[in-house]
Image (tube, rainbow, N blue to C red; front, side, top):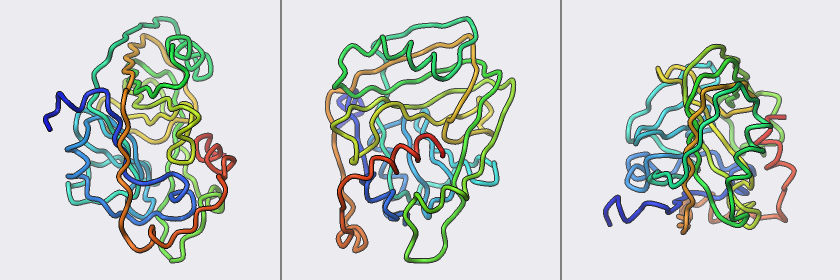
Amino acid sequence: MNHKQQYNKLYQYGVADAFVGGLYKGTLPLKELKLKGDFGLGAPDMLDGELTMLDGKVYQTKATGKTVEPDDNFKTSMLFTTFFKADTVITIENPIGEKALWEQISKELKNKNAMYAIKITGKFDHIKTRAFPPVKNEPFPVISLIFDTQKFFEFSNTQGTLIGYHLPEYLNGINSKGFHFHFLSSDKTQGGHVLDFMAGNLKIEIAELRSFELNIPTDKDFQQFKFEPKDNEALKRVEQGK
């Protein structure tokens, strides 16, 4: 299947409920995911920061604040991606904060039950991101028990891109509903999971995704994982960083 046929399709490896339940060990190399998309979000092996895919390259923002490009054999525990091709483009010149921008974008998302990939480029007067440090000892704790270990970063007057998605209610648990964004600066030195920002001169590109493919891990840990009733509060806290 060529890249053109992959447009408007969301591919995902891993399951969010299992991830927040402690399955942090990477089980799929990035080289395989790069065949499925060029724009995405994910988690590194052993929860060592945040993964961001832009223009076919994957970047890892670590808890040290350093952003690097891991090699193709580096593994992820969960990542979702698409070959990005916008069908809607809007611009916002005046400074706008996170909440107001999500409200503005929501007006452009005509189908509340659709999946959307969203790329936002511009100047960020201020942006706050986070990354989790590595976990080392098994059995790994559920993610709600390691919120206190998050590392937060604040960047000012930086050019960059927000890479993200807005997903519908019915995918919650498989993924996470609503908005989810990572940041990557233009020089690829700053990044992380987005918590807050003030930005301007924004170009917002939106792609409605029309199909979804889930690749289920086959490792022993996943096969033996016990799924409980959805912990929506844990997923919400992961997104909000608190």
